[in-house]
Image (cartoon, rainbow, N blue to C red; front, top):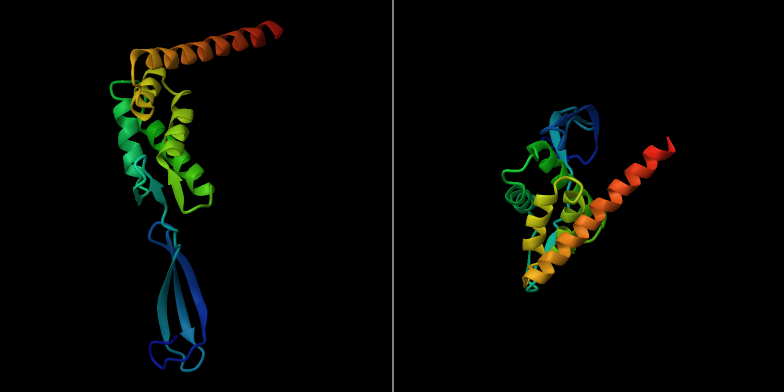
Length: 164
């Protein structure tokens, strides 16, 4: 709507990205009076709620994932670029589900799926918080699974080298 004459029809004269690509700036001209004005269009992101273990819901916060991974990877050879990439991948997977709610369990699983290939120690640290190991046995079981996965990976690498 034209801010000058309130006519409903205008044409776009020029468009360009704004706000680091998160908006589009459009110069418009009223078809009735010729008045030129600027509008901004923003992409509307649907709010995503996270269902906590206790059933409470809170808004999705990628910074919480970032802090959790940073804590797990503390003093490990995992660069900030890799951590940010993991957070981006997890957020993309969660948003690709298309729903408006996601459980903390699924978010944790996505993080662990990414971390397992990056750093074993960071993976175990994250898993110990995410899975809330109740005793030493559950912790040892997780370590055994990880070590078995590593041995399978080495065996597969050796088989590939033998066939070359």
